[in-house]
Length: 201
View 1 (cartoon, rainbow, N blue to C red):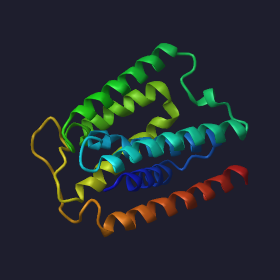
View 2 (view 1 turned 90 degrees about the horizontal axis):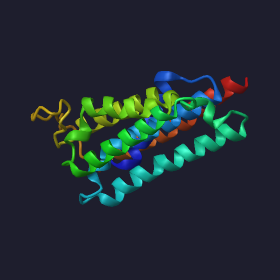
View 3 (view 1 turned 90 degrees about the vertical axis):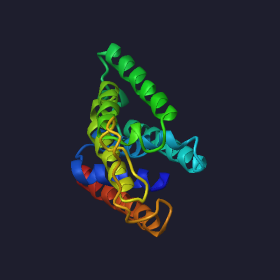
View 4 (view 1 turned 135 degrees about the vertical axis):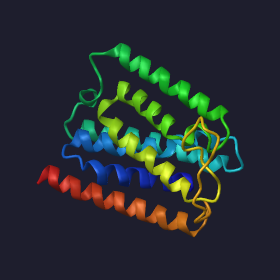
């Protein structure tokens, strides 16, 4: 599927699975779902779909920034949901994350980054930096793998094994992508509104 669809569905899945009940948890879950939903396509930036892949990486960064601002202006401390006392772990996690991004960028599309192994590794890196965002990140990443397995091109789900998996049900940029993008976006907005009603109710 395309970048915006992965972001939208990643956020929706993260919210549905974890249903956070505080402002900090909601912000972390949305940011985690968006980042996790898009991370696997770092390997697509150098392909024919590079514009979409780049947009798919930038949107979650914007969402994460927005969530941190929301958290701040609604009275929560941005650092309260970060691993504040352990700066060494944060630095190690950030470094590990960028190493994984570099490895993913250098890999072939739908190989290293489109695997359960890499989903776990990325999530560990996120956990070291922002523990509260890690569950949503993992859910978002798995949603990416599930959506791409519906396409006609194999993904190396069990990398480093060479055999790929594809259900061949749709094209990445076809009608299914548009429908899923709409469902993900609408569902995320509705879920966020419902969760906020609980928080402030």
